[in-house]
Image (cartoon, rainbow, N blue to C red; front, side, top):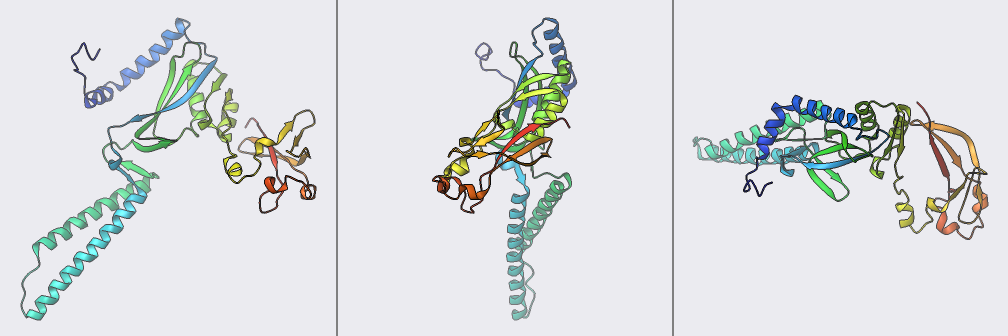
Length: 315
């Protein structure tokens, strides 16, 4: 299409202005598209996939002001102000020794005024961040954020999309400036269910969405979610110790089996945290005393290994 138009394409400003002016119409068109897909039986309305994608905003890294960066810049301005004030004091001392008034250096006075004005602007920006409870803000695009996910970095947005499983059609999307996907799962599930008009849904997402709080909220909303559990054993394996993956759960006997073959039965009463019922499994430290794997199993503190099972419960 671009070739047929001989390279003539609208600028980002044109596209942004069109979206701003016609935002309501575009949202209505999206709703009509979903209704049409439902009428044509193109949506399964049973299984959806949720994922987030980074989109570049009309802003650069340099436009982002973080609280830490503002604090650093303000300290530098204060040092510069002190340096120029010392220069003015030195000039005054020379004038007093000469016994006459030569007048203040206009260049120094001008620079001092510029620094004070810059300081006032930086302080105002810091106050805005504090009042809004934000950690960063872009001068050119107030809604954009400096986002990092794995090796990805962008100054822009994290767009959440819900895709129906039947024909891989996007049925819901939301533009966010969240730095990761971890707290997005329940919100996107519920909004997608509302769009599709269903009370239950099967949802799949990647490990970046794993959160016990979010999983419990999805379960309470009627969504059955499948999310891989992130690998939390890298620190342990990096120390040369046996990871939790080596502890196998035996559902029949409700016990964990450690790498040495010892049984870890449930201990105490299950407790609830973030809508998740947790059961603790362990055995007395004395049983590990003569174990051949003790050196690569237990931490240096000597505490026994503990395993947990976690089951979401309605809230």
